[in-house]
Length: 466
Image 1 (cartoon, rainbow, N blue to C red):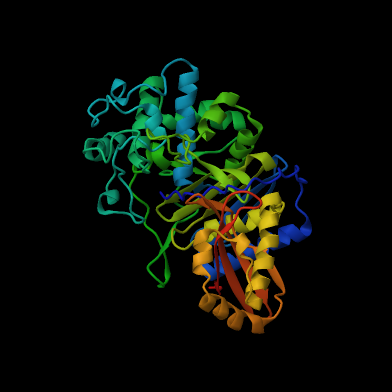
Image 2 (image 1 turned 90 degrees about the horizontal axis):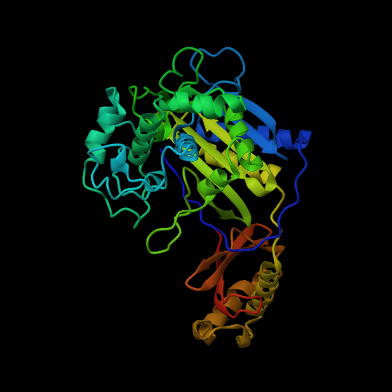
C-alpha cells in the first residue's frame, strides 16, 4: 500500500483565484486523450476518475476494461479498491470518538489493545502518523505467501505488532500498515461496532457515499484487478484472502464517491473544523523535523500550491487522491492494475489541465532574468564575478569559461529559457532548474543561489537535457 512522499516547494506563490467550475469541451477532450493514451502506453486495463473544481464534482468518467467479459462501456459508478486512501477514514473514526469524549489521541495503545510491544509508550496519534515504530506487515508490492490465507486483525497484531519496534516511538517516520490495524481495533473496542459500520453511520451515509468492504467488492460486476510480470502479458490478479487490509485499506468506492469526501474536506463540512485541521497538520518528530504527514494524509506544497494527498495500493489496484484546498479542487484516479504509474501520471496530467498555471513570485522572476543574463555571458566567455559566491568563482576557471564559450556560442540565442520544476531549499541555498530550448535540442541549467532576490550564485551548470 504505497504512499509517495511529495517534496515541498519553498517558493511563495500568489494564491490562485477561485477557478471556474464547469470543464470546457476542450478540457474534457484533453482529459479523455490523456487517460486513453496513458492506458495504451502502460497496458493498464481501465481507469476511473473524478474531478472537483470550484468546490463541486464536475466530471466522473471511466475508461477501458473493468472486468473480464465486459460488453458495454466502463461505468464510473463501480467501486474500485482504494486501499491506503482508506487510512484517512480510520483516522476520522478515531477523531470522532475523541470528539465524543471516549478516548484521547494521546492515550497509549496498551490502554485498549494488550500485548503490543512497548504499547505503553506508543500513542494513538503515533499510530495514525506512522511514527509508532511498529513493523509494517505489508511493505512488499506483491501478495506474499501468508496473504493466500484469511486472517484477522488480531492475527496481524500477533505476528507483527509483537515484534521488536523498528525505532523508539516518535523518533522516526516509517509507513506502517500495522499501526492502522491497531487503530482500527481501538475504534471497534471503544465504539462497540465494527469499523465499517461506525464509518457508515457517522461518515458515509451523511455524505451519500457508497462504501464497501473490499473483500466483498469482488466477483461479477465489480472491477477486476490485473498484474503484469516485467514486460509480459497483462493477467488477471488473484485477490488476497479476506482480512488482510482491514483499517489500513479495506474500502472500495467509486472515485465519484471519494470526491464527495474531498469536497467535505475543502468545505470543512461533516467534521468539526478542528478535526480537518488536525488531520492536515504535519506531525513533528521528537527532534523537531517535519514528517510531511498528518493523520492519514500527506501534506505539503508543490509549485506553490498546497495539497492534501494519499495514494493506495491493493492487490491488483492503484489509487491516487489529491486535494488542492485553496483552489477548491481535487483529482481522484483509480486503476485496476498494480503495475506501471498510470494513476499518478493521469492525476498529474488532469491537475495540469484543470488548475491555473502557477504564477512565479518576484524571487523566481528575478532569478529567471539573472539566469538568462548569465547564460548569455557564458556564451560570450565573459562572466560578472560580482554575481558569484567564492565557491562559484573558484569553479569558473579560465578553462571552464573557455569550454562554456566554445560549446555554447555556436548555438546562438535560445528560443526560450524557462524554469522547470519546483524551487527547493538545499544546503542553505535555493535550488532552481531551467530548460533551455533550441530548435532540435534542449539543454538543462541547474542553479543554486543564496536566498533573496539578489542572492549570489553558488552553482550554474549547463548540461544536455535527458
